[in-house]
Length: 169
Image (cartoon, rainbow, N blue to C red; front, side):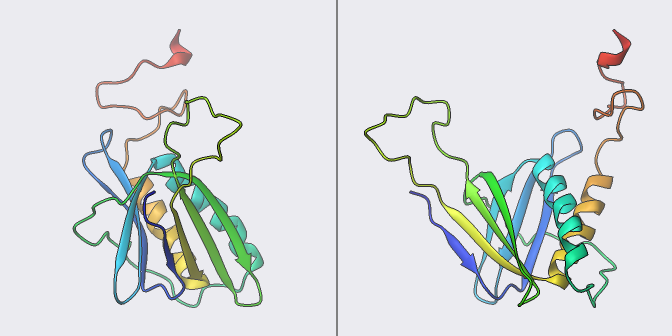
C-alpha cells in the first residue's frame, strides 16, 4: 500500500500544473514546516474542488487575507500517487475545512472477489483554515484561466488550429 499523510497544521496548500496548455499535468500540494506532499490529479478535479469550496465558504466566516498572487508549487513536484476520490468536510466550530483525497484504487476495472476485502488505498487528509481555502480558490481560478480557451459552441477546450467541435456535425 502507498503511504498516507495527514496535515493538521498546514503551511502550504496549493494546486499547480506543469507543461503547456493542452498537455499540462496537474498537482496538488500540502505541507507543514517539516515536509510537503504532492499528488497528481485531473484538471477537472482541481476545478470541481474549487467550485465546491466556493459553496462551502458561504457557511463559514469570510477569509481575512486576500491573496494577490497564486501560490506556486514547491519544486520538485514529484507525485506520491494519483488522486481518485475527494471528500470535503466542514468543522464549523473550528472554522476549518477538512479535505480527504484518496488514491486511485489499483485495478478499478478488475473483478472484485467477494471473499476478499477491497484493496486499501492511501489517503491525504488536510485541515485548512478559511484563509487557506480562499487562497486555493484564487489559485485554482488563476490556474484554469491559463488553460486553452473554451470553444464558443461546445465549451470544450479549443486549440489554436481549432478542434473537432461536435456541434458542427
